[in-house]
Image 1 (cartoon, one colour):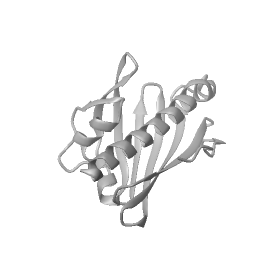
Image 2 (cartoon, rainbow, N blue to C red):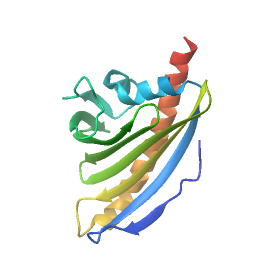
Image 3 (spheres, rainbow, N blue to C red):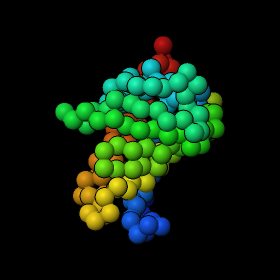
Image 4 (cartoon, one colour):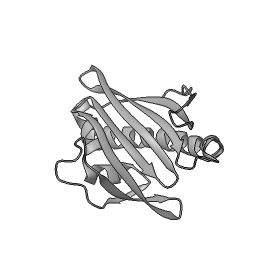
Length: 168
């Protein structure tokens, strides 16, 4: 896993700031196996420790323009995660606009296969707050560190999930 995320803080159009970083993991499983782990709701709940269950995921999830809600737990706090896929290229790219509590995320997963049994999975995340006055502070103190930890944990979990299924 890439241990040094690229962190960029840039002004957003409305005067807010975003924090951006990318993490990458190599998974010993096919791109198709990893894609299913990212896109089949029944599999997402198996590896994503925050996701409890999909509330209204349609059978053709993910498709651009959909709005899917998930029950989410941040420690003991129950939340609703709003997931709006914006770019879906099967076995290649899954990009979503996500809202969770006070934060908004632009999340992009990219899959690349250097060989048929190995997948490089990268997750790029931009974090911003929905609170203009204290948003920058929240992003830096809470949002970005929590998002970074969550992405690292998720990539390790996807790796374990896919490699255990590939071994069966």
